[in-house]
Image (cartoon, rainbow, N blue to C red; front, side, top):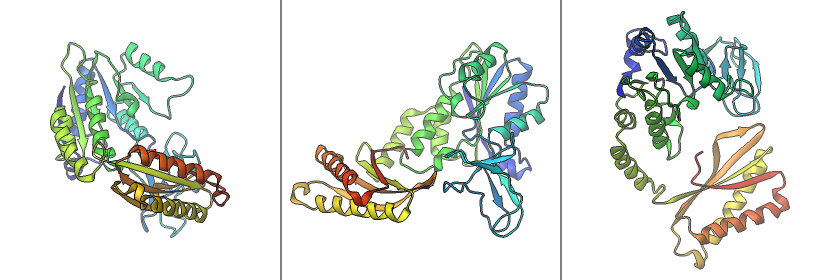
Length: 351
C-alpha cells in the first residue's frame, strides 16, 4: 500500500488534540464515500491511559501491582490490566487533594472520537474488552466482513492474518508505543507490527493506503516499516545487536524471583547470585565470558501482591552454563531458606 507518515506533533501545534489526524480523517471520509472499509490499529485498550494528578503528577496506581491503572469509560472505573483490580475514578489526588486528570488514549476513546467525527457510520471494535465467549474474534470479523462495516478498530488482534479485499485503508495510531517498552526486541517488535498491519490494506483489486501517526516521524524503524524495507531494517538492527552483544551474538539469561515479602525475595536473589558467581569463577568455567548483573526490580516490580526481582546473566549460553543454571535452580527449590519465594529462568525473554 501507499504509506504516509503523519507527524502528530504538528497536529498538536495546529490545535488538533484528537487522536485522529486531519489526514486520517480525510482518508476515512474517502473510504466512506467509496463504500470501502478501513482498519484502525491502536495497541492500547481502555479510554484513557491513566489518571494523573495535575499537582504532584502522581498516577492512580493499582494497590496490588506497581502499575498505573487504565480508565474505562464503559463502566467509569479505573482498571488494572495485570490483576483485574478496579475502582471508581477518583476526582482528587489522595496525596495532595489536587484534581486528577485522565490522560492518554485507548481504543474506547478513539471509538468515541470516530462517532463524533462520523456519527452516521458503524464501527466494530476488537480488543480484550469486547472479545468474549459469545462475541468471539470470528464473530466480530464475520460481522465486519459480511455487513461491510466501514471501520474496524482494535489492538494487535487486528494486525495479523486479516485478508479482506474490501479493506483499502489502514490507520496506525501511536505507532511508536512499542518502541519504548524496553528490551532488545523493541525495534523488531515495532517493525513487525507496523509491516503486518499496513499489509492489511489493498489486498483486493483496489489499491490500498496506510496512514501511520507518530510523535517521532523521523525514527528509522518507523520510516523503514513504512517503506516495507526489510533489508535496511536488518542492517540497522544487526548493528545494534552486535554493539549490545544481544542475540544472535550473545544471550541474556534472566533469573526472576517472586514472593509476597520483598526482603525474602531480595535475600534469595542475592544468595542465588553469590552461588552462581562463585561457580563461574572456578577453573571449569574459565573460558566463559560473562557479566552478572543485579538483582534489580523487574520492569513491573510488583504484580498481584508479589514482588519481582531478577538477575541478568549476559553470556553465550553454552551447554555448561545451561546445566549450571538448572543445577542451581534445583538447589534453590529444595533450600528451606527460600520458602515463599519462586524462581524461574528465561533465556532471551521478551520482558
